[in-house]
Length: 387
Image (cartoon, rainbow, N blue to C red; front, side, top):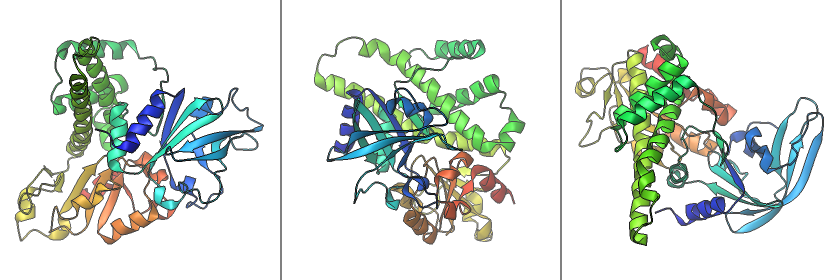
């Protein structure tokens, strides 16, 4: 069941006119040294702020009321900056003691919903459980930077539609194994975008995100195909409806984490890295990835500095500490995450605990500039282990 806060978010979105979400970045909270004010709004969500939209060469603003967390309201300002070199939308003016532009909220998820022309709701999700629950409930890819919910679907190519038809013909009544679904995500990218072995080896960050997104799209399509006969007919009781909904949500959550591990595994194989997955270290501890092998880890003659550990978590604001005792021989551990931004105090705490972040290259700019050089892209991590 969703938490009380997540339940409020869901209710607000369902009864709203449109919603966008995005991660709160270091730039938003002012730790990058920039002078931009307030929350940046992605272009695809600008229609929720202005109608008509702002035009290049002009500045534009209007005042609205925003209810935060269902607890308090601010009289805030939507602004479009179109003069000079700027071309962006922002939400500003929150009053004194406004909490959510403080550094500790970096990496939290801002969910913003229009209720009517001048009234909006906004929620900030901090906990990994709530963020992942949000993505699962609305069936959104964990790699998404921002999404305008209820937006139109992009057109697809004829080749893509043919391949999708083949996929659906094979799996019309049940979900394939997680590894099979991950394979289809990779196959789609190979056929539709030409992501061959050479491209994968030289662009692992881009390929990983593409595979995850493609697999996610396939999963959504499969979900509709398999479950539509069930939800198209009335349920006999509330308990039956709740049980059905929980089945869907639990499948979404478990698939997302497993998907990340499987795609990382494929990237490492293409890159020629020796590794072990779910290898046993001390007791029953089983880290996501050990390099080069489980045998090397348990060989006392093998140099500890040549052992590498990598955990994989879609979000890690709360859960990064779970990896600390998973491999005692490796004091400095690496953690791959799709999280977009983490506060400086948390990054400092991770560093002191010997945890080094690895993120997709495209996500690096979401982190404080002071720490970006300390965070590895997937490509740099692979190079480090190889060397």
